[in-house]
Length: 113
Ligand code: 5GP
Ligand code: ZN
Image (cartoon, rainbow, N blue to C red; front, side):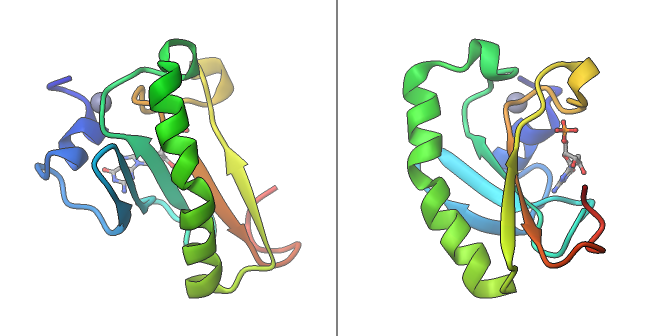
């Protein structure tokens, strides 16, 4: 999708702080860090949200989520980690390229929830 911000991150038109990359999946730091280490995990192919995510794409993405989570745990040393995915504007989705938020948690005043 030519006007999709995350497709532009995938093809390098927009820079990002990469946390993980393989052939199918990219993880990078969210530009607006809810907490330290807040990461977005995306499939490289463009799909709007969970409703149109092919099963194969979903499994390729979730296959690497444990590895990315362990890397975040090692690097940022949080005491917990929330996984969050917004689908549809009403649910808070602002970027319409499927993405999973990994939000490290530190304490009750860490800024999330
Ligand atoms: P949503 O609200 O759609 O679930 O989350 C979209 C996320 O994308 C937001 O947390 C926002 O900060 C992040 N975001 C938007 N534009 C950019 C960008 O250009 N670079 C990065 N790294 N994150 C972005
Ligand atoms: Zn896209």
